[in-house]
Image (tube, rainbow, N blue to C red; front, side, top):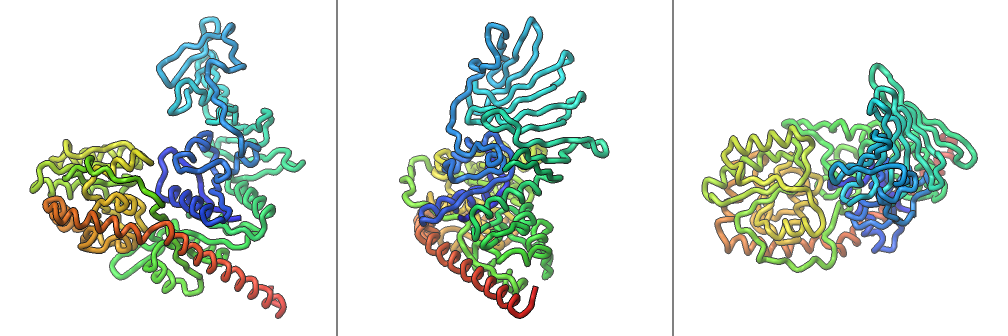
Length: 521
């Protein structure tokens, strides 16, 4: 079995989650068994995976595993059909589409939250005391069953979480305690698992136990760690056939000629390096750099993403000739502020130029700062901070755009650029490691601008948007360049990568046996 280890599948996912999901699809098409493994408790997981095209058998969550709810079909639970709330005894009073109060004898005794994105389906029921403080909250899974119960301290802070199987029996319990004026989880208790109870001080200790259960059932499995905060957990897994870490981003922080590991990468590249068989990266350039710094650790190249077979025909009638796109998370390392400044300069020559952001902001304060900057630059009306979208809705965005920007400090690859390329959108990106250099043939399907040079980037954007013939040439070149990242090429690359992984594992086993034969440890 091939396990791809991550935290969760969210309502709004980053490129890492999309990459893991695409790898699952690719492996299935290659006839290889694979699962996207997640740690976090998430009652919406069964819903969220659908946005990534994943089926129930493609995803394995730790809480579902211990609750025995991995393959439960969906049964919608309407709030007015709850057996525990007979309507002849209680009155339900809606307070808008997302909240309904339960009333008994004129007093509000509970609050029902509606499942996000649904009409009248139960997400949670919070019971209230006479002072309107929460006492108990029942949480429902998107598939329609009661999944967990939260109990609260008198001050309203969380005290105990109980996770249930389908029969309503508690199989996992988390205790929260006040430590230095901060209520936090302090103990995880796995109850009656294989006839025994187990205690853990950290969720990651439970996650390690879970992963060891997987490898015990499927020895010699391949584990690929996709999240840096989980590397140290994967490092300790027993009975795995091979353990690798996929680096989706750039691990180095450069300052002049000096380059240091970013803090998030230190566990995998320093203290736990010997616990992994190697690293996987998206580009040959990153492989070369890492091999130079880590000559003792195998580094192989395999695609972070690919262009799926059979894209839908592009509707060119939607194309806005002066629409600039920015698709991705709005966070400081992505430098969306520079995209706004680029637009301001383009706007001097092309007054109808517009910039559309598609991505979630790290927080509201940062989003407001970007809006204030757009206002300061005199282009607030030309900048759209639009909703995060995926699938067909995102395809519609790419069909409208005429240029896509990438202003990041660095990118391991750049899924957004490949997606845009699939719709013939020319790229203007900063010439930074590593993805842009792999995706952009400078002057052919777009331009590379000097890193941080806003004026240079704006000039290149203006050139493309001002010259229809040039745009059409780059549009055609983008569609052709897409072929370099086809699913067929991705399958070929991963077949080679899997061969390298097997050979590395075989070499490690041979070295271990030789060491033991010679009296080594």
